[in-house]
Image (cartoon, rainbow, N blue to C red; front, side, top):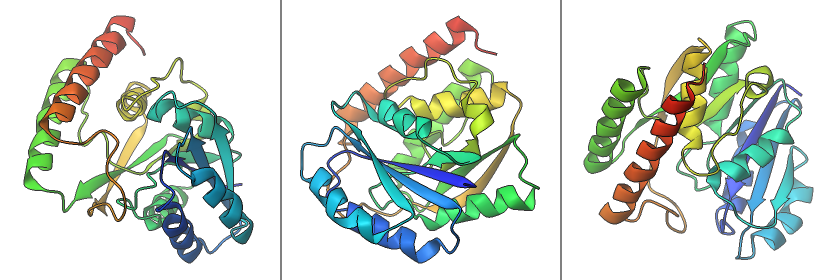
Length: 234
């Protein structure tokens, strides 16, 4: 398998049919797999996956019985990947599965270089969200001493070899920061490409629900940044 894509799904029953359909439209080869992680969903996501997956031979699922966080679900999916290159994107249809194919094309154009880390660079976002991201990017870059911007952009694609170097990755949304920071510390070549970031088709964000949630996100990110810096990961 060349590429394994993890899609964390927490109460995404309405979006799962859409993302599977979109993946089926863009996957034109048999060495790509999609792993949908049912991350302790409390809606009917398990039933939707059971009914739909037989129609999509490129896809399979991993079940996390109790939701322990966004990052934990993704890591469980990454552990199940069989691809030489692995990564993740979101299930909310704000990130186009076609972006994963673009990431793979970049990897193959660079002779399958294991020292690449491919990441999106979000465009078309609301002005306030852009301002929030810019502020967090400036803080992380100065505080961590590494160039870190648009940390939560999707997708993230890298070699399985790089993933095996991770130790105690965070269980929450700090996973995106951890992965990019680890890539910087490992001196990987970070390749960014533009991705469109539209509104959600169904449902609502599980964390981005206004100023209070953004403040909570900032505090969690700062605490994790302190932890990373204290541990002195190299």
